[in-house]
Image (cartoon, rainbow, N blue to C red; front, side, top):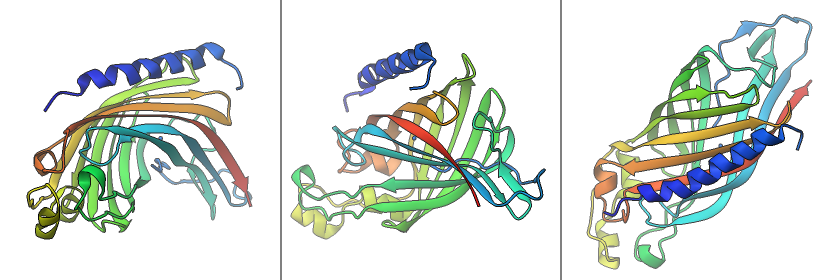
Length: 274
């Protein structure tokens, strides 16, 4: 298949330009992340409190797993930063806090539905899926490693896992750049849902029957940029290059086993006390 590496140049250049512009302004103007180890609250009399970040923006990603073309869409993110409950504090209320050491994380991913039309005519529709799970991470000021396991509570009802790492560069106390590898794994049910072709689907479509097995689904690398406009607002952006592996790459559904995804959005932090 023709390599898609040249496609990474344009979005990466745009991302670098945006982050550079944000850094130059220096004025007010993405899965659940690690909470960190629980520690005893220093203010025992303090009531329950929660701090979280919500983000909204735009993204460009493949129309479906293995598609040769990208489509634009909305990008929504959520991050739980801080929780004080029952005399314990999880995370840190400081908006500029950088987690260090071992941490526990929640993880979720939403996968949109796949419509069996156009080039996928004859294939069954695939319902939207919501994966929920948890993971572990270890962070230092210069790097982080993590692993997550999720289950499709809606949709594919299968297990997936991902591992990754990031190196960090912080030109100043507002801008954080990250770069690191990613790997995604899925069980047989996951692989069959998105890359398999059943006998009846083969009879009704242009694809040959294909029994997809689980294992390593994809590997890739992600570049991220996060700029804090102030303690409440921020700008997050990322560019991800992925390569499908094993049965995911061999599936007749897969037109291109390489893909580039990009997103950028505004984030806002909320802190609520009860």
